[in-house]
Length: 327
Image 1 (cartoon, one colour):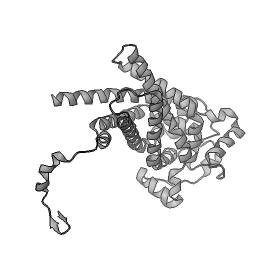
Image 2 (cartoon, rainbow, N blue to C red):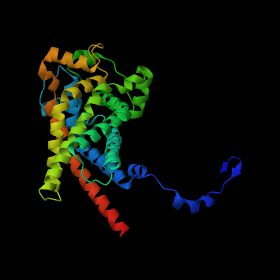
Image 3 (cartoon, rainbow, N blue to C red):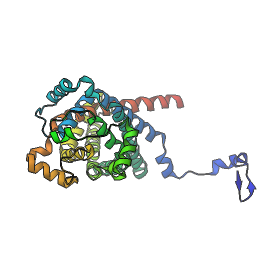
Image 4 (cartoon, rainbow, N blue to C red):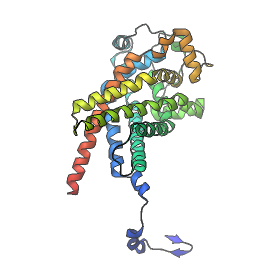
């Protein structure tokens, strides 16, 4: 290594390493604990999505295809199987799992970093702190991973048969995976298209924020009653309740976001968040804002419940193994 024409040997710097103090905030950000939480959350979410993916397929079709007659989740799934085959229920699974892993790793890491940096030695956060940290982590996640989700929505609808004739007649490009999708959307439609639905996503960052606030609040309630260790079934129920509350509160924005990302709109002028919501109310009434809610609740509540269960158990096992190794 050469600095100002003077050669410095790295071996000469080794004795100085103990005296180089790493800032506490930097230690809090790049900690082993944050990595374990992020990895556990990412693996838990991928596991849960794999199990309940057909429900997500039905939810997407209900949100995008306004003319689909079947309203029930399982009726829509039956229609899809009859018209397109059973494998169509799993269309786009691998890209979704890839994006979900990246998205949840980033969210859990950001959420736990914020808690570590701002709470420092405090082990218990308040409702307001959980809501704030969850919202900030959600925004970071949205800004970095939206292109992946835009490509995912296109891949899930690729080859689908729509009841709405305008949508079915639209010629859409065929993508060979998520990377190809991101690159071609950027090239053919411009970079801003990769962030379609970002406005709704910024608002929807409140979804995981509300979810984590409710989840952590219920856990704190259990601990105050003297119960220090929760069972797998209790983690499942708490996760389901938290996601149900967050989904109902933010669902109209999710419908608008799905339409924005699909690239299939009956009228291009209705492309903003407000215009899509207004058009839905005008054409279908207030209930149009909650179209597909049953499928969404069924899918997200079960997925979130299983995700939180897997997350808590994976994190607990990992920390336990780590403590044993240190001993």
